[in-house]
Amino acid sequence: MDAKHDVLVVGAGCAGMRAAIEAFDVGADVAMISKIHPTRSHSGAAEGGINAALGNASEDDPEQHAYDTVKGSDYLGDQDAIEILCQEAPDDVYQLEHWGAVFSRTEDGRIAQRPFGAAGAPRTAYAADITGHVLVQVLYEQIVKRDILTYEEYFAWKLVVDDGRCQGVICWDLLNGGLKVIGAKTVILATGGAGRLYTGTTNAYACTGDGMALALRVGVPLKDMEMMQFHPTTLAPTGVLITEGCRGEGAYLLNAEGERFLERYAPNAMELASRDVISRAEQTEIDEGRGIDGNVLLDLRHLGAEKIIERLHGTRELAQTFAGVDPIYEPIPVRPGAHYHMGGVDTDVWGLTALEGLYSAGEAACVSVHGANRLGGNALMETITYGKRAGRHAAEWALSNTTVTVPEGIVSDADSELRELLARTEGERPWKIRDELARTMHENFGVFRREDQMQRQGEIVDRLRERFRSVVVEDKGMLFNSDLTQALELGFLLELAQCMVVCGLARKESRGAHARPHDYPDRDDENFLKHTLVTWHDGPQLDWKPVTMTKWQPQERTY
Ligand SMILES: Cc1cc2nc3c(=O)[nH]c(=O)nc-3n(C[C@H](O)[C@H](O)[C@H](O)COP(=O)(O)OP(=O)(O)OC[C@H]3O[C@@H](n4cnc5c(N)ncnc54)[C@H](O)[C@@H]3O)c2cc1C
Image 1 (cartoon, rainbow, N blue to C red):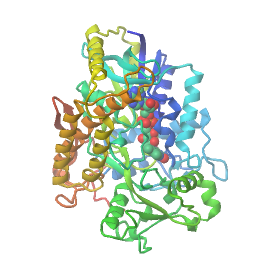
Image 2 (tube, rainbow, N blue to C red):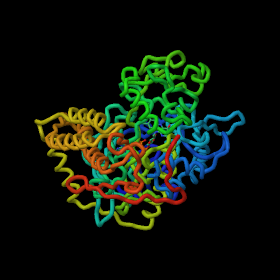
Image 3 (cartoon, protein in one colour):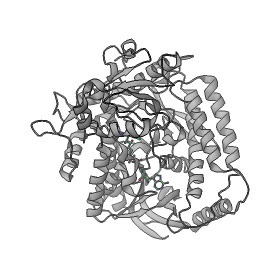
Image 4 (tube, helix red, strand yellow):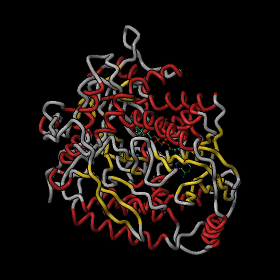
């Protein structure tokens, strides 16, 4: 064992940093592992904002926030977890403010809140359109202030399980090469999403679902893996995100005929309907020939130069750089892109998984507060509130238990596995398999899903996994071997893709992000008001878990 801690947090985005801060404040010896520098985590790319019922912009309360979230989730969210999120959110946001988060302000100096999709009141607190950047910097300051150790550029590759509990992590040290074994009484997976399963995604290159796969490999179930959210406004061909904040500020969506087509899909909420509804509307327009080169148009022109420059400065820059369009004068071409994984590691409301000592929080986890469809602004809030809760519980447990053992066999097996991979001199390059995986997931497991396409995707992923067995890492060196870590990431992605397909085929209904207009166009509460649960035994094994209901019975969902 190279080092030992009470609590080890894997991931240093908003969820990981918030968890580490809380664990430290409870009194634990805590460290973080991150494959990239903490402030480069994908959380820093969040633009639009963070949801809490502060009631600064108009009447609002946690109960209204909870109801919107339950409805937005298409009733698949666990209502106990949602109520906790919405109750604790306001204080958690003020805490961020007191730590120095520079939120945008109302005229009278309170935290400003903008309207976001499917929210009954303007509830999204923001720092212009760089909210994630601001939060990541503020949290990192708190990490540095507490002198919390970060194993930077460490790639977590395997979890150590002994005596029926998680007791550490085996990592690849990117900077120096070689395996490092870090023992811990509790481990928190906060490794973020898996958008890199798709070609068109808003997610950073680091979002390869590592933590979900790590959990899966030690027998911990993943929940609702079919639920990948497509964001309605991403730029072609890169998938760079254009924030929902644009529509919050009043932007229109137009088809090739210049029509605000949402009149036909969501006549009341229009551009502020929920993401699944808008993505489907856009895809239908595009499929039926009313798109422009596979896009629809996001029109900001009527907002005026002043508002665009003040509130949506970053968006203007992105549109200019990546699409060659200045939104003051021209509409931005946009289309749906893979954005957020509602599914993830199954946890309770303290972030605890089925394995003692193992926790998860943030996008890697599925508590579940987002159910079948996440509302914009709720993901950042979840990273903070549930990061905090996981940090607290993991620390309290660690402080009441003492021993950490890492059996030698586990480490030597990992070492041989890696040597074998590096010794291979012939085979296929990982990027070929990765590109094929991402392209076919987009084609066969996208905004709309068909039985035959999902089945085909299952066969494709099987074949890709077979090819992956003889993958070759050309870089044999020790220093910054990203060729090696990308191969390991591909292994993670392939397993997650297989889980998604199995869950998608089993859910024979349309709910939230899982839309099957051709065979099962309606939601079926009688048979499918339940979570999919998948574990791995030589392949994905499907199970189901009931949804926790507290106050709200399912209703038809219209906007
Ligand atoms: C472009 C974009 C804009 C968004 N805008 C908003 C918004 O406005 N509002 C909102 O609520 N949500 C938004 N979201 C969603 C939200 O930002 C994310 O869900 C959330 O920030 C994820 O935080 P996280 O801490 O769980 O993971 P991340 O921030 O992705 O961090 C993951 C961490 O895990 C580490 N890691 C991963 N794998 C390994 C490994 N194998 N070994 C070691 N370390 C590892 C990484 O180094 C990183 O530090 C947006 C998402 C995107 C992509």
